[in-house]
Length: 230
Image (cartoon, rainbow, N blue to C red; front, top):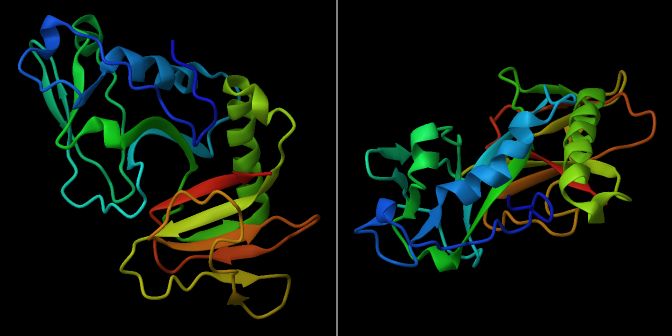
């Protein structure tokens, strides 16, 4: 079972030959079993996780490479499934006994060696676009508790905030921060945290404060809300 170093770490590209991948160009696919091994940890995780989700993500190693036209398919002896990717390269992981038994291939329509394949833990997006700071903090803590189980390097980390990621074509995300009875004011925009993997996207950060009872409103639906650890 492949262990991810942390939520931004690589899922190892272990290329394994087999009849299930007959006809698939070498170097353009990754093993379903390897991906399964990394993803199943979250599925079997027994502690609180109702505020977070785990998806399978494909991301270019070169952040300047646009994801336009990127396609991922699950192919085996008897199985062929298209896995739609969102704008950040994430997809719902397909739990399939058939794919596991056949060691099916996760096939990319580009050179797989130029991409990262990994689990991605993120915070659930609310349909009303309104988030209590306490709920965002609780979601970050849920994500960190899980990550500490799979990455010992995070054991001394703490939740610092969250990162709202919006589409490239959103001119102004319009994220507002309200504290107590104060009027809503713009939340901090831009890469206020180190290690932002979403270059090219519109990013708005919210940093947790002790005793913060703020409320964050997002008129535009974010593509993702990611926990940030320090």
